[in-house]
Image 1 (tube, helix red, strand yellow):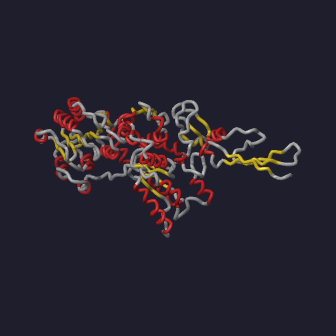
Image 2 (tube, one colour):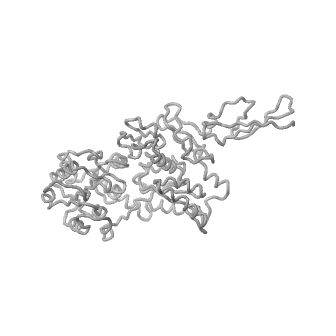
Image 3 (cartoon, helix red, strand yellow):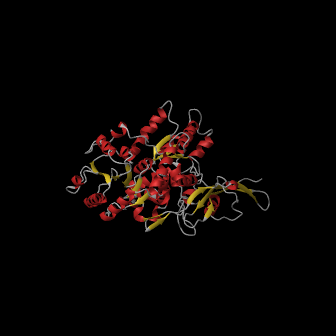
Length: 501
């Protein structure tokens, strides 16, 4: 991520010399540094999230409260719908590995926090899956520019195009599909843990034993360097395939013969499994996978936890019994998985929620330039560059000290929110996610100013007033400068004496 920052200077040069420069930047959420680039160029930046809204809600909270969560064994997210909690070991890997003394992690943190101040966000999810978390993010960010346009992957990938993609493997994609054609509907469980995870020899042994004893048809995908127990493939040749290397996952999952998916719960695999309508057997290991698994198991009820942890070795007897029972009938999770599939397909059709959001996003684009302007005046442009938490122009949102400022009651880092009530619409306030305490931003600003005597200071923050002397011959003009108020919660007060009236 850091290496890509070297593109900032050539992009700026290209932008300033181009006869028709871009009107906005749309960049991945891992490239949070482009938020500052966009601000310098005077154009909006839209963050693209290849992950889900639940994960982003969790990450936003963690980055703001990073110093407070590390001593905890269990982290509860009081401000997120349903108040989810996670054992510390199940938090996203980047949070667990974070070190304040490491410049690389500090750079990552700065970029992730900067994402919160982007002009808008586009998510690879759909409303029927994460509506409550999408609405949560809109409230957190203080605007409605949060669009869900997923699943963005092609839904019909079962043809030649889907089978010809990817890397090398021990069995051709065509042969895999041909093998599936000979199986009955919903009889095959697909076992794959993504491209990043390398199973240990103990895990491979436990999985192969469980698959063999279950009596279930299966496709088991392992790394090309993996060693399966001797004789296993021969013993299960009539009902199982072992693919070493890359597997055509979308065509496999979308095949009528596949009814279950034992997955690590990476987001792409999650969406592909949902679109296929298969029952998901969750084995989260690291990264975002525990968060995704909680969404699938606890929120949506379309998955069942089978195992947890990157080093855990499952009990092969229990795994065999579980697979045999799950694949032999139609349980509640299977029914819900089919229902969610229809909702996912519906979201991506004309008139569906994702298409509506995509159209809504496109309709916003003319306001950024070309057919229209993003801003109509210099003042509006300056406002668009300001920290949207406190309104100051001398820093961006990621540097605002009010974000994560300690709660007076419980010392938990607070969020800056925007009121949605009619009588106070648009006003900022501080909210504690733990004890639910509340404070208007304007009151917090006043409290942070040094206490002054009435004769020295007007009660109007940010203005000036004249205080008459006893003889009425002169005035004292008190000018309050709050330019650096958010930098150190201090106000610089300058007293100027004017001439005789």
